[in-house]
Every structure is written in structure tokens, then in C-alpha cells.
Image (tube, rainbow, N blue to C red; front, side, top):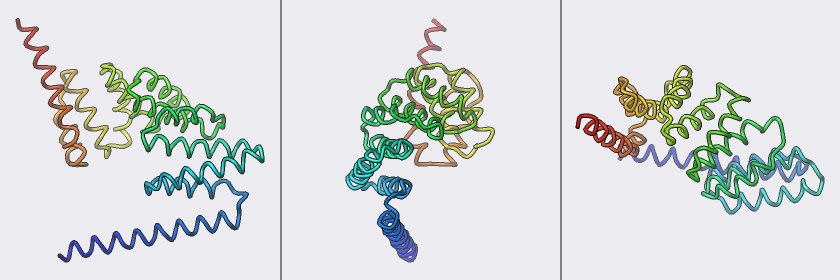
Amino acid sequence: MAVMTEKNELKQSEKRETEKLVHKLIRAIDEHPEKVNNYYDLGSLLTRLNDYEQAEELFMKALGIFEAKKDQSAINLLNYGLGNLYYEVGKPNAAIKLYNKIDDDKLKADSYLMLAQSYMKKGQHKQAVAYGLTAHELRAQDPEINQVIGDSLLALGEFAEAKKYYDAILKRHPGRADTQFNRGLVAMVLGEPYTDYLTQAKQLNPTYYQKSEQRLADIEKTLQKTQSKKNK
């Protein structure tokens, strides 16, 4: 009971802090309606809180304000925030339209990454690789960019290529369960030692591992079938 009470108190504390932050950002918008970051920060926070309707309303309202001012830098940032909202709610086509509008050098790598992730969500892995590689040219060490390229290549059956991107991540970020797991799948297909990767993934995130076990079973079945065909 004591553990449950502590957890509930922690949740209540987090909720109060979040509410404080929301009110602080609303006040910041009232006091400085000319600052785009206040709208973007509040819209992004509402998105994270799954308050999608209010987040969309805020982004649309802000876009109207800054489009009237012809402030392209602000429009780019708000399009990016609204694109992230649409990506989050499973509307990748709407997200893609917004990401494609962005022509700000500061946001280019991020928007290419989100384009790659959006195409991946649609199951269009070749497009995901293309946008992922474009983002990679701008930010080669970014683990999220390397992950989306690796995952798209894995989905396309390009295992040796996927391995390079997973290895690049694991050099600097060994604590990623998704990378460890997918690197294990690649190792399994390529006939390399793979149990260490899967063990790491399980230790780092047991829930993720459990959800992904079916993929592991499917690959094992495919490999067994391939092997039995070879032996005939």
C-alpha cells in the first residue's frame, strides 16, 4: 500500500508541475504575443500531454498570427510543431505536407528525420531511407536519424547495411533497447552471435522486449525454413 501511495503522490506532484508549466506558458503568450517560441512550447507540451485538440487549435491560431506578419521563421517552427502533432495522432500524410513546407536551415535535419519517420509509419521504407540519408548528411551522429535508417533498411531486408547504422548508434548510445534488439535481429539473420544484443535489450526495457518477441519468433521461423530448404 505504501508503494502505491508513493506512486500516486508522485503522479499528483507531476500533474501539478505540468499544470504550473501550462499556466506559465499561457501567461508568457499573453505577455509576449509576438514571441513564437511561447506558442511552439505550449503546443508541443499539449501534444505530449495528449491534449491534441487544444494543441491543434493553438498551432492553427499561431500560424494565422505569424502568416499575417509574413514571419517565415515563425511559420517554419509552427509548421514543424503542427507536423509533429499530426505524426503523433497517426496522420502521416498531413504531417508530410507540413514538413515539406519547412525551408529553415536550423530545422532541416529535424524535418528530414520526421519525414523519414512519417514514411516509415506509412510502410514506405524506400522513401524513409532516402529522407533519413538526407538528414544523415546534416547530422551524421544523431542516434534517431541512424535508427530510422537502420529500421527502414531492416524492413527492406538490407541487413548488412542496417548493421552499420545500428553499430554507429551503439558506439555512443549502448543504452537503447530498440537498437540492441534490432541489432540482435540483424546478427541472427547474418549468422553472427546475437544473444548478447537481445539480453541487453531485455535488461534495458523488458516491456519493449516482450512486445517485440513476435518479430524474433518470425525471423527464427524464416531462418529455419531457409535452412531446411538448403538441406534438401
